[in-house]
Amino acid sequence: MGWFTAPEYWLTRLVFQRALAAVYLVAFLTAALQCRALIGERGLLPVPRFVARVPFKRAPSVFHLHYSDRFFAAWAWAGCAVSAALLAGADAALPLWGAMLLWLVPWALYLSVVNVGQTWYGFGWESLLLETGFVAVLLGNDEVAPPLVVLFLLRWVLFRVEFGAGLIKLRGDACWRKLTCLRYHHETQPMPGPLSWFFHRLPDPLHRVEAAANHVTQLAVPFLLFAPQPVATGAAALMILTQLWLVLSGNFSWLNWITIVLALSAVRLPGRPPPAAAAPPWYEAVVLVVGAMLVLLSRHPVRNMLSRGQVMNRSFDPLHLVNTYGAFGSVSRVRYEVVLEGTRDDAPREDAQWREYEFRGKPGDPRRWPRQFAPYHLRLDWMMWFAALSPAYAGDWFGVLVERLLEGDRATLRLLRRSPFPPGAPPHWIRARLFRYRYTTWGELRATGACWDRVYVRDYLPPTRLSAPAGPP
Image (cartoon, rainbow, N blue to C red; front, side, top):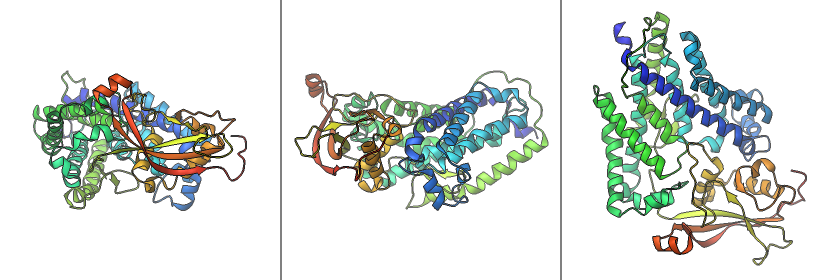
């Protein structure tokens, strides 16, 4: 079938696949380095406890069959190794069927992680990576030209990411319709980056331009993805520029980068395609059957986008094949932060020597400037932002976090930037206090060197201690 392939997209496929492999690598690296403390046997939300109450059919994962911290670490590092091999082009050295199976491996490995990750893996970009990774299995390698059906499916995923996000903004918060959300967003976003202070201090008319440009990119431009070239390339380029603006303005894990990867699939890159054989019949059949299945499953996110009760970031099947996306349907006007403090004094009086725990990414010390972490995902830091919005977001893990800090648990302490107490001498008491944070003005920054100003609001958790002395961590 001559219509089946698009040889002119061979370089596009190559760039897309290598970029996707890089995102996979970051995702597996995040799991390998953090998940023992988060979902390990003594984690904040242990996998064994989760799989004991959630059946396999609701959350398919190899960890239903067996879990240990060592097995999980081997699984995550295996994902890193496969991702690195794909980044280096290992799929090009295999026959077509072998390349497809190799691309299926990181998807299956990561699916097992996401489906037991619970709160720590409840972010939209987890499902987005899985959906994109599954479609990428069908792209093949240089044995055949890129299939048009798969290129369409990738654009369809990108359309839903952008258009769904645009709709949720218009429906979710009046400040998006008034073009005023960016007055607050750079200051109140989950994890500011090193340039976020400067974005916040842009003149108000530029904030309005930002918001208006966002609406154009998310509500109008996505339809142009399905236009003939070079219009589709232009639409994808606008999306890439918008995502790079977001990369500069904050730390959004790999959300921006996986969106850029998807946009690359719509860009027609120049270059003469290498000779390729005609697509074998079995390959055409697999692509068409799976493609039809994905289009059929898409009815769920389409209904959601058209609904007045549109929801963000939901999977409609346990394999995360087709999902709905969206971000910042509402924007906080005020930033709150939970600050954890400990003391080794015997009594938790106000005049005790309280020392503050420092997180890697979330604001703490007002003089400490935010750093760039994305695309790496600091999961605990992100959830601490949600915890500050409402204790309901932290009800199933915050108490365990405090317990682990009181024990001086080494795995938990490795999630932090700095603990004021060594593992062998944990605090006797820990308390949590809620502060209101705001960016300093230009004058305050010059005078104090602090990018944040904070004001105590109330106690978040009163001084707490272990009921029995902690044993060796």
